[in-house]
Length: 404
Image (cartoon, rainbow, N blue to C red; front, side, top):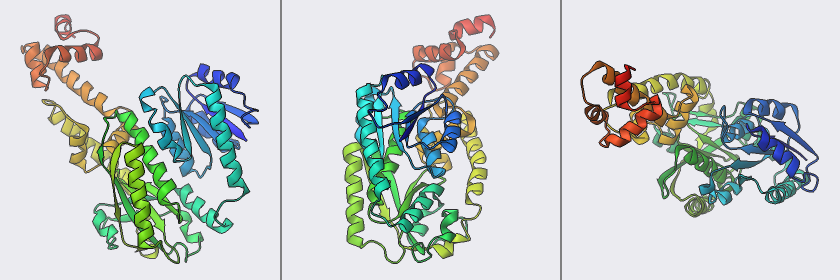
């Protein structure tokens, strides 16, 4: 087996390379990458079985890199490395999705044990799984394409009434080459987080949502082929490829209940699962052309709308939830989309806009600093001053005195 270590810190990579007994862990070749771009190149050029990846890197997160490997159809196991000690509870959750989670600084013996376990899993898969070769190829083809559901009114789709008026189902391009009996119908399940029982930062919530999708793959697709997707609004979907006959209703309900219990026990959240009606793929195939391009074109107007809303409401506190509601997106998805398209964290952008407005008023008006703070939604003057200093390097009074 071969492994690839990805971390933007060179000493972290070299430390793992020197400290782990790779041969004892069953690894014959170890590759190194110091960023996501280099990692993508190596993953396409080399035969990699296990990806050992820092979860936080400046150009692209480890989660985004793993999503890319899935979109490229690269079948490999993943070990995430992170400094987030408060995420110890996520360890078991990520294991549900053929991944593991290790805290930095890495304990080499712990990593070696994880690698041995992944090696056994890979060996079992290579010796033959439960699917026939034909079924395996079909399932892998769908995972490779990372199917996407884009839905404006998901109730219509769940009822099997999807029409060509902007409600689409994007199925993998390779579907036409698969057995039409196996892929003749698809049954969508809408999965949504009703409530988080623990407060999370934006980055931590992204980790948990990734784990939720991996768990959905492991649990809801245990009995038949399918794919897990996210639509253009941040909603989660599970697509069940029904073929010659879907699961009995009782079995499907049992799997959904098990998924909800798992999310409650491991992910500290309450999930809802809406089971839709079976949709003929043939009726939707013509509609799926151009879905991704339309979704991409819609991103810029959405983000401009968010930025305009922020500019118009700098006088009060703004939450992700409020902004997401303006463009009908999932809050976590809006944060990811904003960061991807602008290169900025949404909360940092709001802070920067508020402090820019404060700086302009400090130099262009006679308002007192406390009046400016209140006018930007800050009731605590000291807190406002700390934020201003964080952005501009000086406190508001000094900024005004220096003339900027």
